[in-house]
Image 1: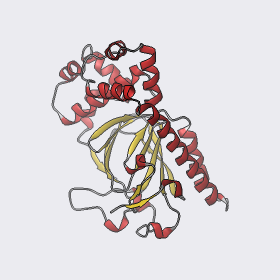
Image 2: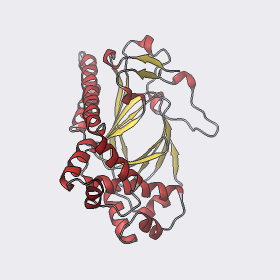
Image 3: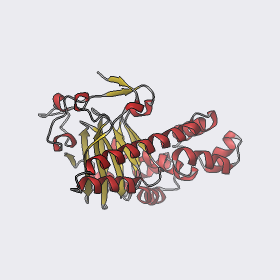
Image 4: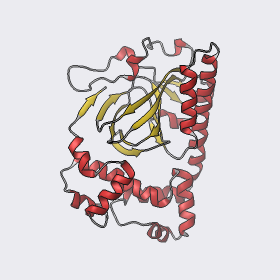
Length: 301
């Protein structure tokens, strides 16, 4: 059951910040006990939330709500991210189930098997009336200075200066406000009918041979205009957004089907399997064939 509240009344409290590093290709399946921001500052990974796969890279922010079941697949390169654990309300009575130690809350439990999530450890689920974007987990890309903001929070958390608790929470509030404003600004573009239809068209037709020019022609707009409004919403150029969607779809096919690489390349309108592998590695840091080799290496943490 969720508690209804207004986002404008939040008094966020930082619970922990740590820098998480991965140096080998592994898959993690997890369930989040708390509210968290994951800010990627090096490398890339594939994140699956609600059966939707997205390739995330440097500067991307992943927001997780309590009870979110998700998985992350790390590629064989150095990867690191800041893990920011927090409450939206500092008053402990707003989250009566939260207890020490903090490390319990970022460790996940096996969903199927001998271990199940412990109900008494979940943070209270809040339902925001005025900012509904935070009522779901999400990934945002293109927001400026995310790594710098996360690094500052990390430094404040590690410092022993007595007044740092106040500075931590003030900096956390600033970070949340910046994210909220970025989402709202992007939403202004998304609410316009044209950009909504363009984004939906790309998502629905990513398996076809769509190009910047063909999309501009499809909607009878100049290519530079389409590129601009897509960039304003997604943080990526039109070409990059198209390619990322193809890579995301390729990841799904690699993990969920036995289709040969040549067939996946053809299905997603790449020139050939060599071109597909080159693009996929450029965007993820991992060859498509390696995804399948490591897909069986499942780690719960």
